[in-house]
Length: 280
Length: 136
View 1 (cartoon, rainbow over the protein chains, first blue to last red):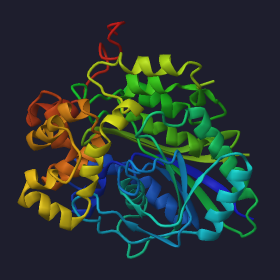
View 2 (tube, rainbow over the protein chains, first blue to last red; view 1 turned 180 degrees about the horizontal axis):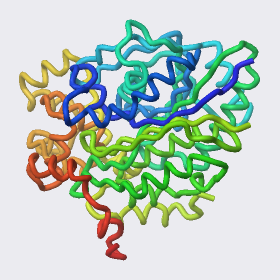
View 3 (cartoon, each protein chain N blue to C red; view 1 turned 45 degrees about the horizontal axis):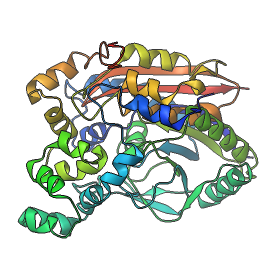
View 4 (cartoon, chains in turn brown, orange; view 1 turned 90 degrees about the vertical axis):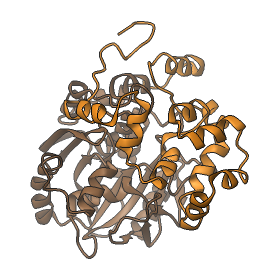
């Protein structure tokens, strides 16, 4: 039987990907941002997950304004890195897990989550930067990936509560998949950042850290934060943190925090990263 | 519950955030062709045509005169006012070889040096920038 063994969250800032691709991670500006991932990379080597359910948002790469799915699941055999305007990132193709993805898609729809099923798409920095942060620059990624794309660009995005409930439904779907698979769920994006307007550059370390505090344990407070609070407190792009709640929902009743990292800045953004394990 | 009971109240609150344009349905409708134009720059052959003659390239798109001028001026605050979304506008500044840090600094009213220094010092504080009406 497939089982969710751990969850993690991480920012997916494109500049982190560029720093890895260009060999700049040891430079003084970048070193503290990357230092917080060293623990996780060593831990991952021991975990050896088979599949990562990777919750992210597309940044006008696979989806333009023609079609805006609130929740989409990638069911393809493989996903190519997207050309975001400067050529695709030099990273391996992302291998999917169509059997598990289709099983999750069907289960979620029967569980009243009306998913959009994606059979062909390229994946942008939102998905590939987290893989680079966890696994570096291998010839091939050591995991298969089930992408879950969440609309956090065009308002309204889904509520935090709905994202948490989607995570709970994903956990039920994984638990009913017959193959023996070690599955992790990753929630990406955030933390505080605003990429637009005169308020650009907003960072709220106190709010970000209170958010991370409440990922641990059995509190469900985070599912009730309204969109307006993310916008006011964490900047217009801080809304991406609702995607972390899909991961938290998938871990069940309670969690134990294994690792935590916070750093400002990476480009315009606060870097946040936690590793959690479920407490049954 | 996180679900808003009143869609009008939900949307009205977005207009109370200083220096911020939330990408609402109204902005998405206003900026549809602007954002789709930007999206076209994902293809290398389109980027080549765009770089060769920006004005001629824009003729193929149903942008308003104001939107076209704001694109040519790279006036990103104006583009957001005219329905542009930052992730779509990113295709334009990426094609120019600008990073997010460089492009975003142009919207902040600060020089790149001052903006970068602010970020290194921990970013812009939310104090006083949460709400226009509450001045909080």
